[in-house]
Length: 215
Ligand SMILES: Cc1cc2nc3c(=O)[nH]c(=O)nc-3n(C[C@H](O)[C@H](O)[C@H](O)COP(=O)(O)O)c2cc1C
Image 1 (cartoon, rainbow, N blue to C red):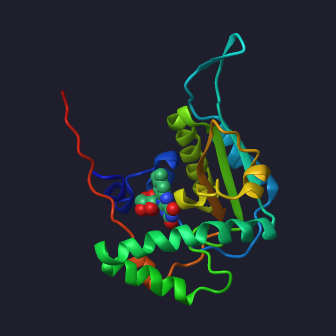
Image 2 (tube, rainbow, N blue to C red):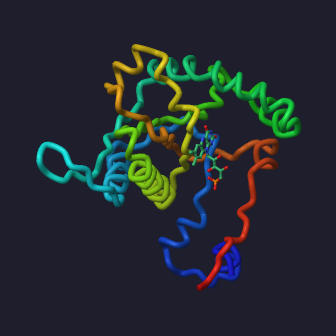
């Protein structure tokens, strides 16, 4: 029985499993600030994720990540302006391959208030998870912990891979203190969820049953 079937049948009473089952990427947010205490709690959840050890300065180090929280409106605008052309270019390639999806996404884009932000979804908070390029698994686990924690606290979140494409802007690289061997994971956007448009709801993928082999 899937988590959703269990939830529907009211057979699921474990709050962690329930939160995992209910978490979905949120792409529409209320313009309402999130208290810093809540943001810190979400970062703490990320920080609790398992991580691969690395030998550095004579000892084994864990937790390869660091977090940059963006709440400044001007900086968010800079991020939007930097990533929007990349997103637009990628959308154009979707025009041929997924015309129906392209049409719905563009419908949403056109209806958006300024600044049109289809990358960070106008979320009030953007958290860049930054770590060595060779620690993708560990950093991704931190991201998932953060998204599940956000969901448990009544917040929406989304992992926005497009949002990491900022290395072409020297000011952003400087602000994030990105080193050559570092990579951005996420970023994870956070906010209080707003009802999504019908166009976007119609292209939301349904979860498939897991493929499992028992030996
Ligand atoms: C590596 C990665 C990159 C993603 N990049 C984006 C993105 O740039 N924009 C976006 O809206 N969603 C992005 N997503 C979210 C996925 O689209 C989403 O997780 C997927 O559609 C499944 O939906 P769910 O999260 O609601 O279960 C990304 C997810 C992952 C794991």
